Length: 115
Image 1 (tube, helix red, strand yellow):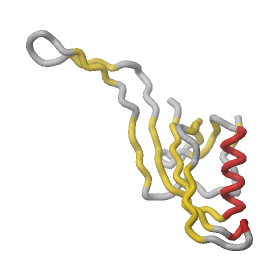
Image 2 (image 1 turned 135 degrees about the vertical axis):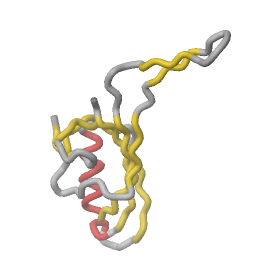
Image 3 (image 1 turned 90 degrees about the vertical axis):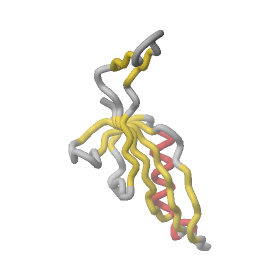
Image 4 (image 1 turned 120 degrees about the vertical axis):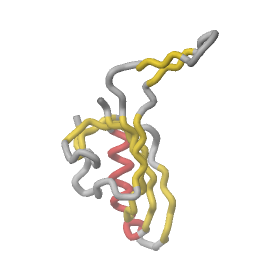
C-alpha cells in the first residue's frame, strides 16, 4: 500500500471531522422508534484544504490517479492508519504565474479513515 507523499504537507486546520452514521432507526407503530447499530466499526471522514504550489499539486494529482487507499499519519490520533479518497481533489487557483510550478492553489480534500 502506498504512503502519503513526504513532499506534501500533512492535513491542516481547520478540518472537518465527521464519524460515519452507523445507526438504523425503525419506526414503530406506537412509542419511540427502535435504534440499533448498523455495524461495529465506523469510518471517520476528514475534509480539509491544503495550500499547494503547482509542483505539489501535480504530485497530489499523480498520487490520486494511482492510489485509492494509502497510509498516512492520522490527524486525530497521530498513529499510522489507512485512508482512502472519498472524492477527487478540487483545486482553486489562488495566484497565477507564468511558471506553472509557482502557481498557488487551494486544494480541497475529502478522505476516509478506514476502521
